[in-house]
Image (cartoon, rainbow, N blue to C red; front, side):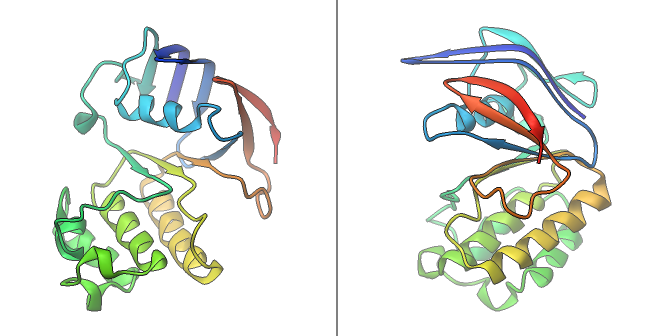
Length: 205
C-alpha cells in the first residue's frame, strides 16, 4: 500500500501539503484539480524528483521518503509521455525491463510487434501511448501513477490500454493513482481534490 503522512514540499513559488493519503493494494484512486494546483508535483514527489521539507512516504510499510527514484519501484506515465527520442520503440520499451518474457508479453498484448524498429517520432499519439505504457509496466512497478495519459488519444486506444493496465493491476495487486479530468465512468472509486497545493478527500465517485 501507499501511505503519505504530513508531506510538505516547498518549491520556488509553490508549496504542497498532503496531510494524509492512503491507497490500498489493488485499489484505484483518482485526483482532480485545476492546472497548476499541484497534482503533477505530488506525483513527482512520490517518485522522488522533489525532496520534501517534512513528512513521510511509505510503500508497503517501507519508508521511501529519501531513497533515489530508481530504487522506489514506482512507475509513472505523464500526459506528454516523455519517450526517449534517441531510441527506437524496442529500445524504449526494454530500457528498464525487469523480465524479458513479461516485456515480450506486453509488446504482444499492446500490439506493438510491428513497431519495434520504428523511430518514436514517427508514431501516432495512440501508438506513443502504448509504447509509454509498455515501457512503464516492463519495470514491474509496485505502484502505478497515471498523470492524464489518455487525454490526447481516441477511445478505442484508451480502452485497449486500460485493459492491459487492469490486467497488471490485478495480477500484481498493486495500487494505482490517476490524475484525470474525465469523471465519467468512474464509479465506486475514492476521489481527491487538489486545490492550491493541498490534497483533500472529496467523496466516492
